[in-house]
Structure formats: C-alpha cells, structure tokens
Image (cartoon, rainbow, N blue to C red; front, side, top):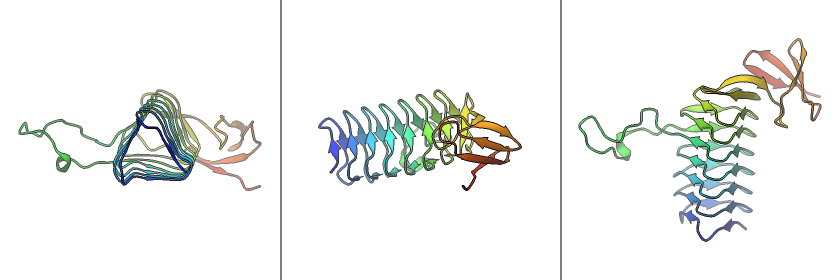
Length: 198
C-alpha cells in the first residue's frame, strides 16, 4: 500500500508502487512510474513519464524533469535539478511562445545505486554511472563513470567510491579497498573501476 499526503498532486494515471510515499505538496505528473518503496519528499516534482526504480529517494524540492530515468536504489538530494532542455528558450525566433512541439526533451539517466548530492544540477543529456556519487552543489555536464565521486562546477572525478558511498583507499597498482566494508575494486583505466570478485 502506498501513502500519498492529501496536499500532494498525483496524476490519476501515475503508477505508484507498493510501499511508496509521496509527501506534502509534491507533484507527480501523468504516466510516471514509481517503483516499490520510493520516497518523494515535500515539494518535489516528478515530470511526465519519468521512470523511477525500486527503493529510490527523491528528497524535498528536487526537480526531476522528463524524460529522466532513475534505476533502483537511486538517491536524489534536496533541491537537485535534472534538466531536460539543451538549448532552452521561452520563445521561437519569430517571437512566438514555444510549445511542447517546438523542442526536443533530453533526459538524465541515473544508474543503480547512484547518489546526487543536495543542490546539484545534472545538465541533460548525461548519464550517472552505477554507485557513483555527485558531491553537493556540483554541476554535471558530462557522463559520470561507475563508482566515481565527482565534485565542482563543472563536476570532475576526484576519487572513487564503493557501494557504501565512502571514498576508497588506494592500495597501489590499481587496487582499491573500501574502508567500511572491505570490498575490493580494481582501476582498469583512469575512467573505469570494477568490483573484484571474492
């Protein structure tokens, strides 16, 4: 059973998975698919047709514009913005107001387990890799590799993180270990980190 606060605005044809919660003043538009156990915080916006996997959190006042795709276990921090227009304009060249048919929406894709820190902006089209972490206040303009910790404006990789979300310890020769879980990782290239089978 899902929980929808009376002040939330949820389209009648949005699919809300079991165990999901939509809080005060949030808006969930038409054709949205929310998986199971998703939390949509106060004042958040989820655009038309957005797909959200299971066990995701969309925190207060985040703006998730269509056609964004969030895989399972994604965290969207407070006031995060996922954009959808590469060349935004309110009007056409002739001065007429743009309508939906006057531009092509481009989306942000966030892969399994990734987290976007508070106040960050992801500029579409961009893909955030599995278990990556975008530091608070960053502006993401390029794809982010799996397990990368990126920060800044524009965001750049500064460390690697594991599934626990903490920076990995560099053991040399491309070997990394998670100080929290002991999980091991290997850096195949400057932009590729993989889990090491146990």
